[in-house]
Image 1 (cartoon, rainbow, N blue to C red):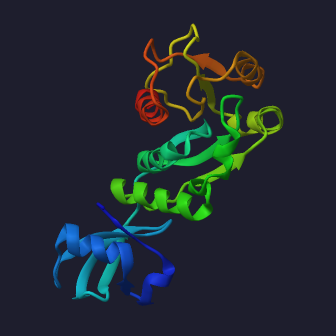
Image 2 (cartoon, one colour; image 1 turned 120 degrees about the vertical axis):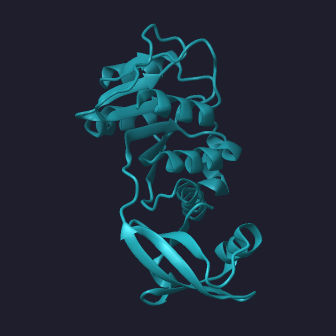
Image 3 (cartoon, one colour; image 1 turned 30 degrees about the vertical axis):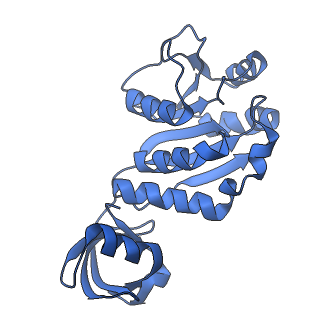
Length: 235
């Protein structure tokens, strides 16, 4: 935890906050902090600053906080992602949040198993928790928007063209002939498929929606690795 993310209900009265639970445990067990120490803090969807510990015991942590700078700029990338396996989903969300991706749309595909959609890891509570972990890692405060679309064709045909309008629209595809570009200076809408990739008819639908299929080489990467690799390559 490189930043303690605060929420409005953490404030006793400005500028003092009171924390319990996971954040208290982390400060005591990992930071090994003591009264008088300063920690990096930030308010959700707001500014970053410092918190000076005024009380710390087994019951609670209290700090006086000063928020004096803006969070890092977002990555100009909209991520359209075929819903990964539940055990991978947490890593993908936390990783994408730490990279500064602010809009993620989880979609269906032929190779996405139906059971994935009923996983508790897709619950709003878990998605929020993983987003927070990613922000804490990267010292960011702006929570990503994470949406779900269970019907592939209506989303690609009816919504995706407007989502991608004004951006460089790319779909990562192992069999594409065109190489993925590098160091772009424009916003990107990036589609990444499930393990095994999109089937041909899905690629055709995405190309009709204005997306260019691009390859990142001969290696087949795990979803979480592909997200990080492509974000670094594109920007």
